[in-house]
Length: 100
Image (cartoon, rainbow, N blue to C red):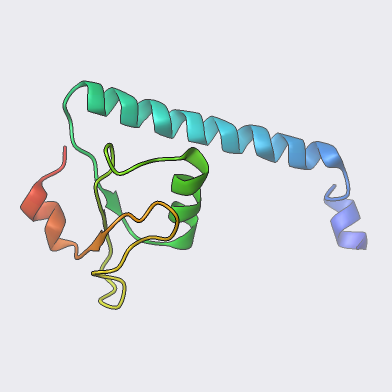
C-alpha cells in the first residue's frame, strides 16, 4: 500500500488520466481504420495477444475494417479472438492476402 500511495495509485486522477489516454488510443485506431477503409485499403492484425484483443474490443472494431489477425503460434491458428471473433490465421496469410 505504501508503494501504491507513493506512486499515486490511490488518487482517482491517475485512473482518469489513464482512461483519457486509452480513449485517445482508441480514437486514433478508429480514425486510422476509417481512413484506410475510405481509401479502399486493407488492414490486417499481427499477433493475437490479449492486449491487442483488449483494444480491439474496447474500440468496438468489427471485421469489415480488420478481416483477420495473424499469429505464429500454431495452437492459436484456426481459432478466433474472443469478443469480436476475428479469425486467427498463420503469418503466411499476410503474404497471401497482401494487406496495404
